[in-house]
Length: 244
Image 1 (spheres, helix red, strand yellow):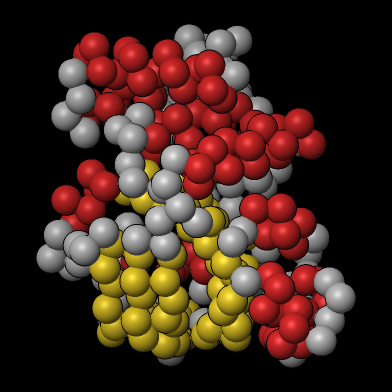
Image 2 (tube, rainbow, N blue to C red):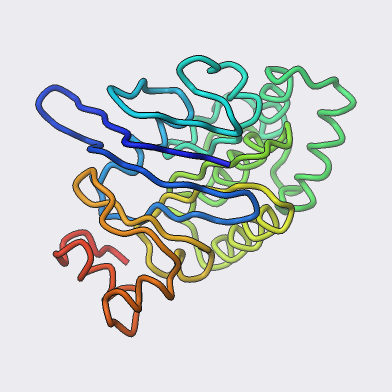
């Protein structure tokens, strides 16, 4: 479970995150929805201790990223926006390397990779170098790498960017499986269809602040709208950023 209270982060004179608070519960998918530049990625980077917050409190499974950065890395699975694969390594080597960093034995790594290859349908490219991979292949490797140590909490930063229809469907099925397994999943996106298809709760962020927080039904009731897209526009007070 993630608890975020009054999170703030500035870069010079730019206030990227300005008092963000929300909770992401186990067994649920929590969507961070907002236009590009809203502060979603900065918020996620503070959650996985890449950036220190200027103010505020973060607890991830009872751990504070400022005090427990290494321990949090063991309980978190992170799929960052840039994927960050090592292009000269094969998909298998990319995943195995992260398994080794998490202290898994060779037997554990081999077992987990075998399971992930089947679940994510990676058999055709698992032993190829990742240089030249398609977006869909890169995302699958990034997810497998993030999940090799079976983390309880999973952070996904716009994972479906650039994916085709079939890859997007496979990704959504996998994320639903994480929820069914009782994991806490935070999904950052600006794609309305993704939120509607996956998220149990929605946190709408605009200009670094939480514009709304609730279930899809609650947001529709609050705005009196018939669609999440219309509710989103009303809650952020602008049509800017509606990209999908």
